[in-house]
Image (cartoon, rainbow, N blue to C red; front, side, top):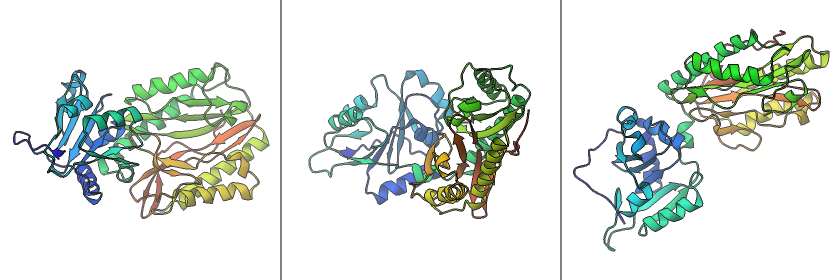
Length: 374
């Protein structure tokens, strides 16, 4: 197995992202890398289609997709040579495209694959298509690079956050006991697009009353409970990049206990933002807030991670959780989203995306966090 050399292939300009991956390939003595995870491909090439594979060598890169995208690749794809196939990338490899068969005297091509993003069936098919290659399954190959946002990525995320802020303002005018959770969720999706977003970043969460104690409650046909808290978790996509924001509001008069819990979550949220520093582990930051809740007697009511990195995907590495040993790099965008959930009563969660630099963490949203009573 050897790398194909084709003098007719144009040598493509290398982006800093590709340069970083190629440096890692060199460090791991890889002759080629096959990227199959679509969010990683969009991060590297800007291609937004639903079917693609990216093949990298030390000097060349090919984006392989199908005929549905023959025009789209002309305007979207950067730093890779588009290749349209009707047979699929594995058949093209089997036919000797991109990585071609060589004589037995040639050192076998050491080819990396995304072991955590590739199905067993696809891996076996690759082995059959490249019998002379040494396939190396790699975990989290792109994660460390994706975590750090460049100026363009940060700009797109700020645009998404700005839309989410505007949507939240719209919701405050309509949330009442006269509407259902699903109606509120439908308004989120509607205004996300009206304000310029591509789509929802994820299915919105709208949960009132005791349903707010379900961290990932699906919006129901139940009307918003009067005299209750309502948890609203939403986000949109701009230029491929996500926003993710949670606010909890009160409809009518809520109990003193609910106000106490709200203020406790808000204090924990602000503590998390103040404490976030580059190079601390996700476990360390999560632990600061978890210990705060435990000291106030609510440790068991905080069951999920404090947050996560975010970008082209809503949930990326590093996770800000109790088991995460991954460092939070300067230049990353993470969420700080503590929550307390009292089964049968209510839940409270407050979430901001924050930009982490050597000066600390700066929240990106402008939506108010003090308790809003409607």
